[in-house]
Amino acid sequence: MNIEHLKLFVRLAATQNISQAGKELGLSPAVASLHINKLEDGLGVRLVHRTTRKVSLTEDGLAFLPHAEDVLSSVEAARASVGAGKVSPSGTLRVAAPASFGRMHLVPALEEFLSRYPDLYVDFRFSDSIVDMVEGGFDIAIRNAELKDSSLIARKLAADTRIMCASPGYLAKYGEPLVPADLAEHACVNLTGLEHWTFDTPDGPVTVKASGRLRTDNGEAMRDASVAGAGISINSTWSAYKHLASGELIQILKDYPLVTDAAIWAVYPSSRQLAPKVRAFIDYYAECFAAPLYWDAQL
Image 1: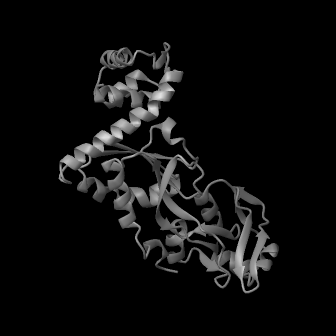
Image 2: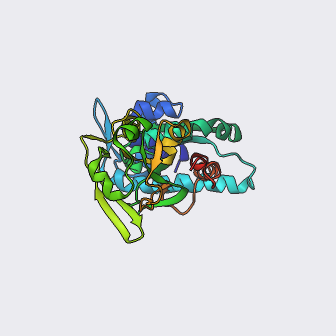
Image 3: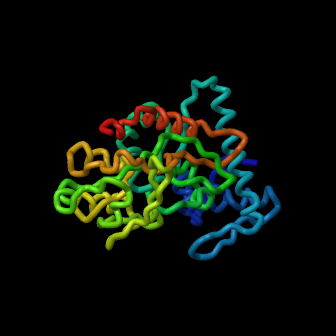
């Protein structure tokens, strides 16, 4: 079985386009189509449905895909082991990440990563939606949500500290809440799905339903609305640390920390061997985000 044919098949499964998959591997559409034909002939099954506009995997193709991915990961790991650690990770690393966190913390640290691994190419896809790693053909996903897919492995990169914030202008106009119950008298900027806020108090956890006229599904928009004086919001320190340092936001309710176990996770498909390029990326960013976290320095 030809490894290059497997690579093409895996990329075709992600792109659903033979021309695009071939282009990523330096192949013409005609050669890419020929390689898929040879793979199917060798297996004796049809892996791909072809139409004039796109391709999709057959039932056999869907069953074969995870095995093809495991083979490629094992081959890459084997090559690295033969080089006794001297072979640099290579190829294209596809990474999905939340848009805000990716722009603010992954991209600024990327130059050093690329300098360390000159044979690696990085394909970042930034979205606040949870992506399907297999369908999207991603090697790694960065997430700050609880892992629910048991077919994935997660490694914690950093804590995701969350605090209550408001602008100086808002506090000057409406006053500062002194206990969580005071939030009922304030405008709160809500993040969709996070309307109930739980605080650690001397009497145990206290949950408050945030009230307010503004709700958004984007963390940066929520933060910026608070900066503009629209109300009080929960913010991850990785998102608000520059605004806290500049004084545009002020942390409030410091004596009543939020009850949360949120964290930044690197998630990847389970397999017998962890591909060297995946390990390199995770180890590098774990190093970048090692405690003490630079975005918590002002707390």
